[in-house]
Amino acid sequence: MGVPANQRGPYRPMRFEATIEDCIVEGELPDGLEGGFYRNGPTWRRPNKQGLETVYTIDGMVQGLVFRDGKVEFRNRWVRTPKFVAEERAGRSLFSYADGKFDDWRAWGLGDAIRDEHNAGIPQGTANINAMPFNGEVLALSEQGCPPIALDPITLETKGIVPWSSQLSDGLFEKVCFGDGAFGPHPKWDDVKEELWSCTYRDRKPFISVHCVTLDGVVRTKHLDDGPYCAIAHDMWITENYAIVAFAPFLQDRARIAQGRGIYGWDTSLPTVIAVIRRDDIDGPVQWIEADFEPEYIMHTLSANEIDGKIVLDGPIFNSPPFKTDEVFPPGGPFVPFWQVGTTCIGRWVLDLEKGRATSEHLSDTPAELPKIDERFWGKPYEWGFYTAGERVKDGMRMNTVMRRNVHTGKEDSYTIKHDRPVGVYESVFVPRTPDAPEGDGYLITPVSYFNERHTDFMVFNADDLPSGPVAKVVLPFAVGWTPHGHWMDFH
Image 1 (cartoon, one colour):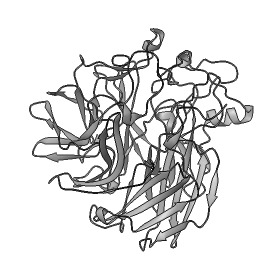
Image 2 (cartoon, rainbow, N blue to C red; image 1 turned 30 degrees about the vertical axis):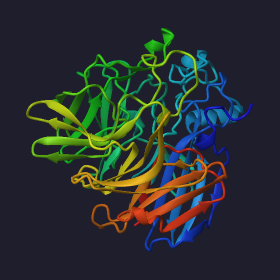
Image 3 (spheres, one colour; image 1 turned 180 degrees about the horizontal axis):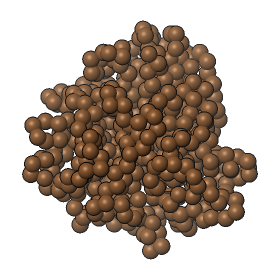
């Protein structure tokens, strides 16, 4: 068979492991740039038993762009999850899924695995959504069905499931072995309190659980027992005092599959409610905030500020989730890329803790997604946000711009990647100029896939001067695979 139809263009998989020990650099790399930019993404390795080649069934591949001693190295390696290792030994796919019976967009691979003697006791998920540094390692993170996987930050070799995973709650799927557990793809690291916060969600009570992990591997958990429905909590916020998770009516429920429906739902009759948890009292009561706005969805968070008794939650706001649901789309038809399903803009939800109410503000008409901050300021007051932006087109959004925004004043500046053929502008990462530099003082690194010409540039910008364009480009002689998310590890 050829490459699956839903993995072409910017989604075309990079199916080989590569090492480039001295990458070509155009321009001048900034002095003192020492660290690694790690990215992770779903990569097609072999045909699935059911032909189900989706984000949630194919394997993870981590890319590492390492800056050391004025040189740049590139590596990419498969994330060797329990599923990957078992299938590698067998030389074939071992998993089928309850929603694999569909032959259209309803087939996600998020139904229960059909168990047999070949896959018994093996978590069905793949760690392919994000790569994030924690405690000297790089964690490969999944949406559902796989615990965090630790990687070596230089070689990218898989070290194994993290030792604290047995303390995690289950996610969408029940645990199938010791060490199985769910953590969510977008943790938040507070370097002052040395806490890593994340959440996971499921289609049974408690619908969402919040986890806090410390460097010694101790996990504290808050189950949101009063959560109203099975919301998809893909991301969350932290401030100095609070952890915040939203219940918006984008649903994930395996019961829908048996009804002939896709697992995702968008039920605008349900209210949006937001859970506010005190970080210094994770076992204490949850404050529930009710939204005074029509249903909308924040898939990826920017960050949050506490201002005058209110919590300001920033992020790109979708008018509806960027996934097909049968409330909107009839059965039939293929998977459609995210930018062609929903439209988005930068915005914020403002929580009034005294009144227990939330309001929504849309701050710009410009499409925005894949938000980033200076991650030293997670859990602290922050001022600067970065994201991928673009323009509205007939079939959704064209994302071709990197943008910086002052979240207090609204001032924006940007740089648009112009090319005579389509390119893939992937999620950026912020790199501090020095470990103690002021917030936002540093560089932005943006991967750009010229997938038609089969090469890739990692563009390096001065973060405070995006309009001047990149000061350097790290040039790779192939198109890297699609990697939705990644982070920077500072070697200083």
